[in-house]
Amino acid sequence: QSVLTQPPSVSGAPGQRVTISCTGSSSNIGAGYDVHWYQQLPGTAPKLLIYDNINRPSGIPDRFSGSRSGTSASLAITGLQAEDEADYHCQSYDSRLGGFVVFGGGTKLAVL
Amino acid sequence: QVQLQESGPGLVKPSETLSLTCTVSGGSMSDYYWTWIRQPAGKGLEWIGRIYSSGDTNYNPSLKSRVTMSLDTSKNHFSLRLTSVTAADAALYYCARDPDGSGYDDYWGQGTLVTVSS
Picture 1 (spheres, each protein chain N blue to C red):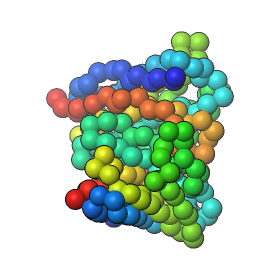
Picture 2: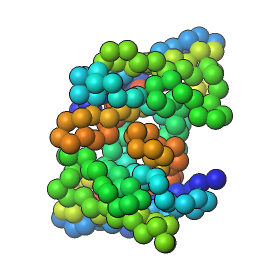
Picture 3: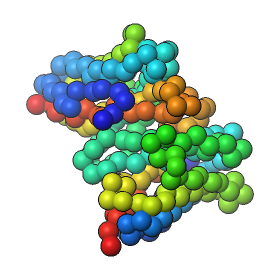
């Protein structure tokens, strides 16, 4: 049971826009801790996609964007491409029990 | 370009200790946090803990009683020890770098698979 909740799967057609939600609580996202997103292509290590809610590392296309509001965050992907088919993970910090980093359960994106 | 490479036994017996090392190349270990994350087959990511270059550690409360992390900046590596392993500890183990302590990891190793079996 992950501390952050993501939908198990989402799908979209090429060119469409999809969003992936990440729901937390008052001890993590709701407490103002930043949310980060990773893309994990099949058989590879996760790759940082969005950090500190809205920032893209160098080389990440602006088709990927992040947002945070209240106890939730979202990742949006516009102009969906076949190569975007992957697992997406959200991450934040939780203040309970001395504080630790938490992940969502991951969302599998299918490009139809 | 910073690179990380995990190494260690791929098979550990139940009740024994899992030991992994992550070798860092292409950059200094100083002033960074170094993280261990694992992923059971077909499941999501689980943060195990991190160690700062000073040696300060922060562990996942669910694993804290069994986890020890250490580092040797002179040898450019850091290590993970997980005691009393069970089948639930079988996973792909990743090491990674957290650049500023805010929790995100910008560089990752390729991962090493650990199986728990007698």
